[in-house]
Length: 193
Image 1 (tube, rainbow, N blue to C red):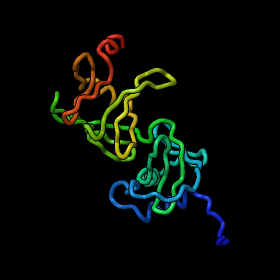
Image 2 (cartoon, helix red, strand yellow):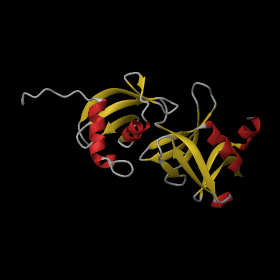
Image 3 (cartoon, helix red, strand yellow):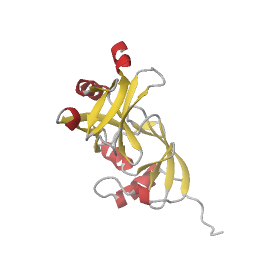
Image 4 (cartoon, rainbow, N blue to C red):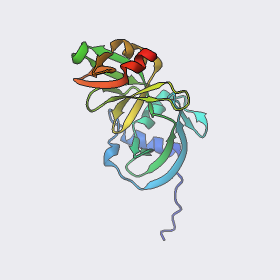
């Protein structure tokens, strides 16, 4: 035994580590595999609000910094630095897509999404769009892949804009982006809608 007491993970410690490694864009968390240090009382709500010990984190820069060290492994989410990995809770998706820009039309259309933390992703084969149902309400819940297994729930205003950009292919209503077609619902479902 070394005589050292294990250090309990804290948001302050993670923040200091994230600041020390922060570069432009998300940290290379896919390269890091530190030991698991337990769970921390941090949660991302469905609307994208981050909470620490039940209190919202109201500093956007702090949320962006934490989001840059976010990693998903199977169905769990972690904040990861080169020396520690702590589990957090995510109610739905860790990001919310708050804007979408469309360039081109039809099969040549390119959709670029921006999240509430400032990340952007171009929908395509590497960043697919998918539709699920909100388990609580049964309403459509559209998502776009942002990076490394992390998705964004597409907000309502962006979803309505996307509905205007949709197309019908082989009985499906969906979206074209970067040469890929993403089926969202059958034409029957759309007509019943």
